[in-house]
Image (cartoon, rainbow, N blue to C red; front, side, top):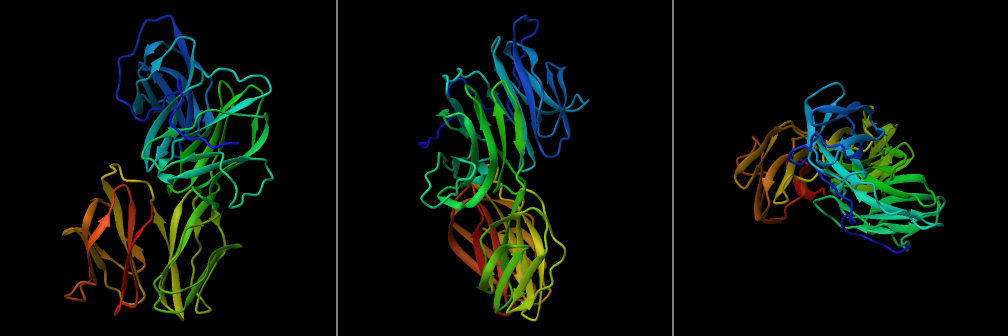
Length: 428
């Protein structure tokens, strides 16, 4: 199947949190609307139309039945079950006798919505149609592979769809396929080994239209997935994996790590900053060694859809690991970046501070910890300074850094406190 990408097909609208419009009242003509609860933190949602509750108690990962809503410019509000306080509002135009789905979802802690029309023409006999709706732009450029359920992806596999890096929602055109059961996998663009989401079995029925939704996860790098049959069933496939990378600040020695049977780092000379590896979410036995000596690793639980850094500090004979939560959602404005400092120094107990363009971003960040993320303005000549109270000179001073907008950055300070290594790493 050939690859497609693009914006929404004609007749389909996507909207985030939109400004209120006047609601058409008193009209006898109606369209049909259903609510999809694709959130993680709202167990049950209702839908109000002009302050009237039209849909109630939609549980997480479920879709409601259709409700009649007056045609025209509608004012729709998503609220917690039984509440009248709007969590989000949208103002779509509803056409008489047409059907729509309002998808409520979360991205970076913010509740958003997408407005999907379900009125495409019925496919011809002997075919089905498929479209991908990407509501997770934080995951970056993606390839979507629609294959047989037993197909093995290789570097030569041509993606069915390619979604470019974008700051907004995007969708593919409808693709006609032979009815049957398929596997739909989402990978990083150009890298079939970097699996971001997976529906292991998706049935595309004859003359049915299925919209596969890509939804944001907790960490931002992976995607949750769901299949919406136009005027039919909705099935959610939450991501059961997490992403983790090994970062070692130990001053020397070779470091290796595995989560259960999943290898995270085969062996790298410390200090080192590894790449993200996808592992099963939940609690797994971790094995971390430095120069062949086992490091102390506490019980670790990886949340589904999360991004994390496993930070190893200490010495080769007494190394210890701690799990840091990573947030790889893009900043609100494409002209800004999110940045933090990670203190991975092998020795000492002094807190570090980070100054960006002469503004203090974080202070007293102790070894084995990270600061919170802060927003900084993108700059083609950024100045970055790390200081310690134990020294009158900066631990690190870098100037003229070309830091483009829309990114997430970690400033890692690693190695021996007497000769630290500072690395600015773009995480997304």
